[in-house]
Image (cartoon, rainbow, N blue to C red; front, side, top):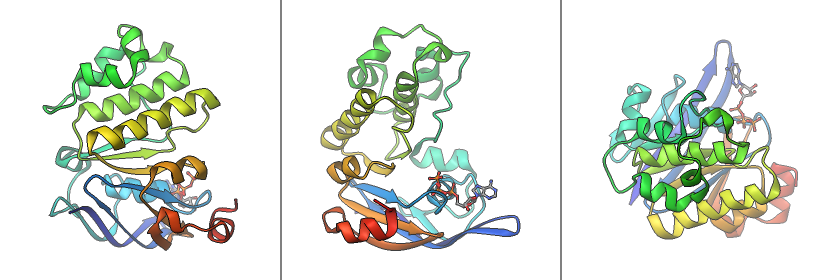
Length: 228
Ligand code: ATP
């Protein structure tokens, strides 16, 4: 069953156009990698899906049109965003960050702490005092507390030490195996994406130019579009 469908998405920032026709879909329980070099439109695509920038084109989520919804309504439909740069509430504690986001469903504090035991150990610490990796875990935990049907991760491992990156990837694999969540993931590390994603979409200058099973992403395509 298709959960999210995006068809021919265009976005402008004032006079400059960032997206010229992006199409992608995410099925229930599927992990989709959104790829492309810097500035190709990945974050803009995510912001459009979350209704944080105005866009044109068809977008449906769980059979409902996203087109005219404000962002809080898109969130309430079940789109959980882990934004680039984490954006935890710095003056709030770990537990306050998590409970502020909570909506009824399977995900509660206990499940988040099972996924990230480090957050359990730091429940009353302020978000501002956490390490970068712990803040990333908190940002993921906060999105899970909204009990989303689709989790969107924008550069969740960026700027983290290799060992912490592996913890985040471990959590993403865990979510894929055990939660049945649909996940749309943007990241620069192709090897890790290839290990977790079922399908991939590549953006090139604001257009989706490749969309297929991740296993079909050849070194030639990766070289041409991703520069790796
Ligand atoms: P990165 O990997 O660097 O985050 P990206 O693929 O996520 O890149 P976007 O951030 O979506 O790319 O940017 C797509 C294009 O839109 C770029 O040309 C960028 O300069 C432009 N852009 C992004 N945000 C704005 C903005 N607020 N105002 C004007 N132009 C913007």
